[in-house]
Length: 85
Image (tube, rainbow, N blue to C red; front, side):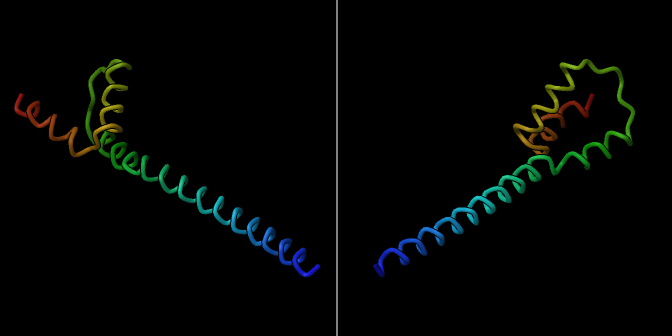
């Protein structure tokens, strides 16, 4: 009969470990989400400092998608050629 309490103890430990892992995974997802949106305040602050002419919704979405996919440095480098205009 000594094995039954040991088995129950192991199951309780496993349940605690699974809950701990679930908590860690949630914190990880939250941190990843925060990183994916970390540039928004900087971009919005920069946009507030300059005047922007009329912009179609599709164009704005394309710019935002490029930023999300390629990152600010790559998009800024691609736009450098336009600064000469």
